[in-house]
Length: 527
Image (cartoon, rainbow, N blue to C red; front, side, top):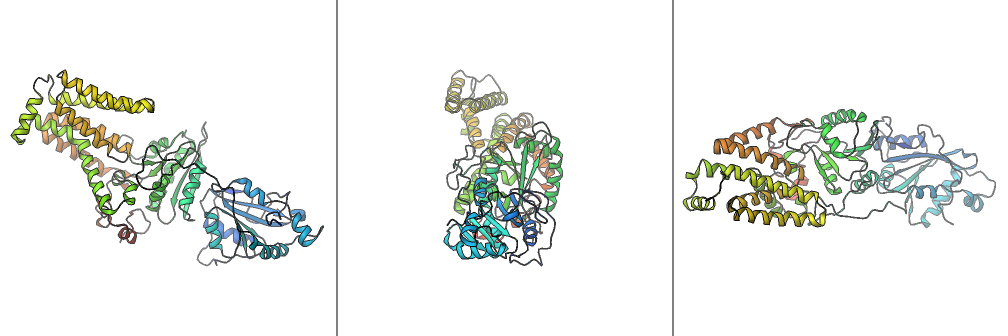
């Protein structure tokens, strides 16, 4: 006899003291966890209060009360993660008690909680997917693992079973974040599926997910998640304050959230970062970040995105420490090449030619012989058309986009040299600058470098090396004054935190990082 065919066929969501109807992220009453025992109480209301406290502010946790027996007079409730199971699996469990009545108790006899207790304690071992749970913490763990856990009134144990119809997803690799080594699971346009994938990786009741629905025309639903006790309390308060202002706005995509809550809308530097990889999102949560998911969008917004974060990749932690540190140093060099190489060339060739070695200076003079434009105009023209080709390659259909951008760059570069419009060394400078910008992990940060490259070239054309120094000083002053959700943008460089420098320019061994958490967002102060 199938032990899952014991519940009422005509069950309904009745009333349980303190429960109400199906609850999805409803604010839960506070309780005192310090004195609460970990055992399961025979009183249904006590168990409900414990679980409400544990899963407070978790909108993907569903508590569903219902009843069974003749007259529907016996109370019970189920608890599960709605993003990890299919609803039909729970409905299947809530079927008739007729088999139990017929085979165990007898027709026409009232089924009492004692009968349920006797039946399951005797028969549950015959099923591999059903287990008896006698500890509230074990029940919490089973819920987070995708089980449905059922509590009965008058029984000091719970019944848990693994839902056989777990939500399945096709694993696909992110197109924006290619992976050499590490997980390849990418998010999709279904917010509940994304929440389920995150729950699979972070099975902890401290992982809170709060859902918000806008009241505009689109009535878009979005959610934000964080690790309670890890996230900085003041940062979370400020984030909620800004999110409350979005309830009357039209939010169509995660980038809308970014622009509506960022500190400086006119700064070229991104203050948040995006990911389509669940491992990156979970790593950010563990570091004390806040993530935002929007229905209909596959991208996850990570708040805040500090300067150091934008230069790092989660793949750094999947390589050995020597390799990861070398790659980070290469990225740092690429940062300065991407933003400053054309301006340095302009400054040296226009104002400071005496500082160049004679052989190099002669090579530059010979390559520029017959060029009708000064170095700065030549650089602006070549950079403009390089950016134009790159944008055209992005907007064209994928099968022809890459071919057009590569072939176009080769053809136009060669034609410009043959026509005497551009010098070979300028083509090399522009190419190296473009390659260096491709080495930046975050696309929105690479765009900021591309934007800043042009004013740097203008400063170099007017004041030479001194102009470049002034431009870098202005950029540094802007970065020093920029804050994201109350956090300094340059942290841990400014304010300087020596303890956290082991994971900035180089990556210390993982064993050392795990013994001493690197995050600056924890609620407790750094020691």
